[in-house]
Amino acid sequence: MYLRQRKEIMDEISTCTRCKLHNTRITPVLPCGNPESRIMVIAQSPGETENRNGVMFTGPSGKLFYELLEETGIDRNDLYLTNLIKCMLPGARRPHHGEIHSCTPFLDLEAELLHPLLQVPLGFHATRYLLKKYRLPVPDRKSVKHLFGLVLRKDKTIIFPLRHPTALLFNPAKKGIMLTNYHRLHELISKMKNGQL
Image (cartoon, rainbow, N blue to C red; front, top):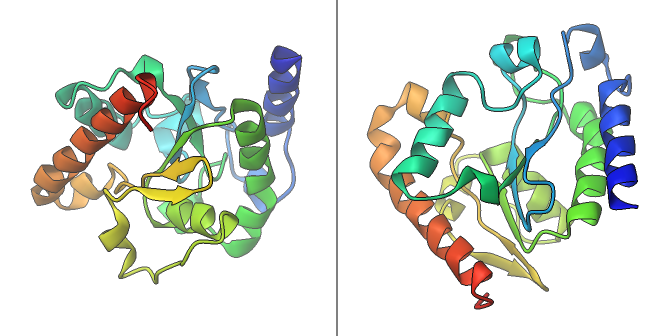
């Protein structure tokens, strides 16, 4: 049942025409990683490299993401990776409200199948979406940075917002605090595996 439902979601993402982004994409980028994981990492959207090859985290920010994981001892095979928006945003612009509204039903379906205990949104838009979904206070764009690296709980779900690795492309000085927060993520994953969350 699970595999059939997952394939249906992937097929629907692959053929989606819900918003105008399908007119400018080369290929929709499907979720990847461990399909049985209880840890769901949610990035914002694919970049140009991902748009060409259809694989998440294969561009410059993906390289930084995997470096952060490696430096903090996080096994990428423990993670399920997905995007808030499944198609590339032209010019690397911010997503429009209508695009988020059209695309996030896929994310919700993924969560229903995965039942993640730990959700890790990367960056402002993914964080804001989860906060709204779980009816938690939503800070403005300038204040959301104060949530990065904090554990937010809602019922049985833990939300652990992190800066998107793209931040390092513009400000390498942020690497220290990002490594600290990825170390915290490693600790959360270890506690989850040991049934301590």
